[in-house]
Image 1 (spheres, rainbow, N blue to C red):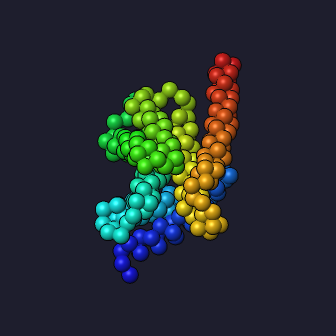
Image 2: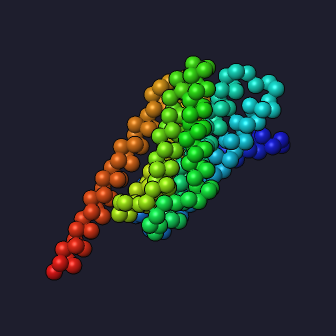
Image 3: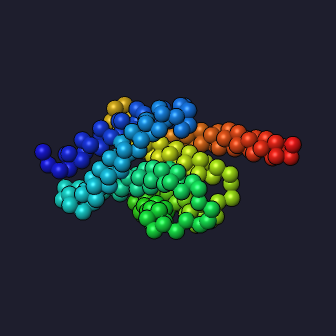
Length: 237
């Protein structure tokens, strides 16, 4: 079996695993055994998806002599999805590693990953404009948005209580968006025999999961704000 076929098989296995389990950490107790275990299953599945997608995209662009314009554009978008999912998952895990930081973060790898997400979103978006593809033009704006947020978080001193928790939500749900969008764009059309360029398909995951992220942020914002106020009252007493 050739290497490309191996990576494609790994990509399918990792993708379906991620698609099956991504919702479990959302509904289970945060920090609990199930949340942590399934969360790591999802992270490793997405690592396989990202690495395999990046390899297949690069292979198609650089080494596939039979690749036509459509396949090459698909490959560039695949490369961006790989960067988006990988960078989001990386960010979601790394913020937990530095949750006690009290000053700006200067780790070279973390900064590089966020810059890569930002610049790849910009580059693929420009490419989308050049080939007049709405999907490849507008979806990469998510990379610009998330990359900017990540850099802003790393390069600034934390000011919000439990800041790492909210960033963890943001990183992992952004990764979920890329997971579901990739399936909706590439997997669902093949299974349901519909056009992959259908705007509803690739916007729907964002429309659904962004409100989930906002809901989590509001819920835990009120929760920890209440705890803080209770602590202040008890100190006064």
